[in-house]
Image (tube, rainbow, N blue to C red):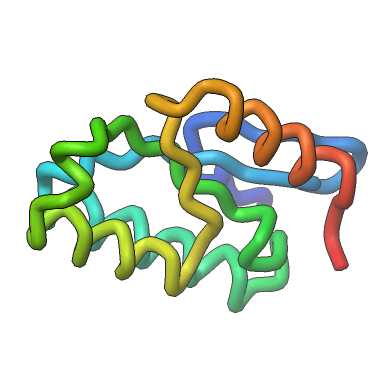
Length: 103
């Protein structure tokens, strides 16, 4: 039975190359859910951890808050975290993930 992946976006070529999920770093529940889904995708060998991408938007000030920093650190245990607030770095990271495919 085909199963719909719980991600917001994906890059595919017959199989997922990279999957993307948005996360609100201000919400512990949202971060927990995203971490669980990314861990599931990696354990199911849908993509490797570097190609399971969590998209966040956080300013430098927000990232300095201990609650936000700990949530980002948790997400980094299960996915590649891309902060879209830093557009150039985010674009580079997304392009890298889409080129490399599964390992």
